[in-house]
Image (cartoon, rainbow, N blue to C red):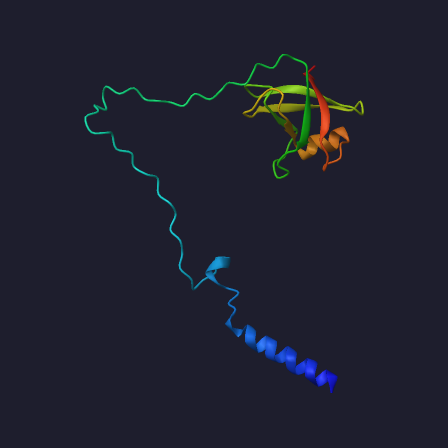
Length: 149
């Protein structure tokens, strides 16, 4: 008797699920309205402003301090889908090669890639560099950045 009740309850619950559409617009399936992509706004000059006389206003990005050849930074795992040996860091203003040394006395030559932020900010190491240094992928690691030799 108990099995019959459970069976009937299960069947009635499954019958009630008929209204759920797994291929709905929420899951980007067919049959639902498709959202159009946002369009870039067209900027119009203010009334009375001569466009020929106006100087273009370009945002000035704060430049990263120049790399001085030796620094210590705390690094975490960067984007694991990007291959290679690299470190994204605010220590440099342009890409360059450098030697990275860990607390475990392991070292590897990587490409330093600039990112915005303060020089005291953290850095992100590639998964290949973290493995080469023998660092745990889920922890923050203090590394020393030196000139490539």
